[in-house]
Image (cartoon, rainbow, N blue to C red):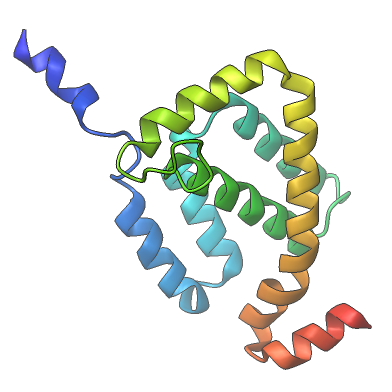
Length: 156
């Protein structure tokens, strides 16, 4: 019946995207933590199981105080950024934003099945690398709003 055909035609991700853009603009009003939590709640259902697992592990580390809140937020932001750019086709093999939600999702699932452990490792390394740079820059800059000072903090 036609009712069954229409839902898959609409891409799954674009619904929360305008709200995500608003959140990025509102981050300075909301605060980094609230902004990240809001983004998570919006897109959690769209994330792949592997990413959801990594997010819960990060949350557990935060609760056990293995991670500082700043590091946790940086890692979560890095993961979300990575996932969103993959979903939008930016990092996908076809690079087409039009069908990125479908194409990159299938491609990454296929890649995950082949080298699952390697993929998870790369993702963690990428999150660690980008979080180390974003924790010194965006984290401190959002709070202090003085990028020059946050850079010197990163060097110190």
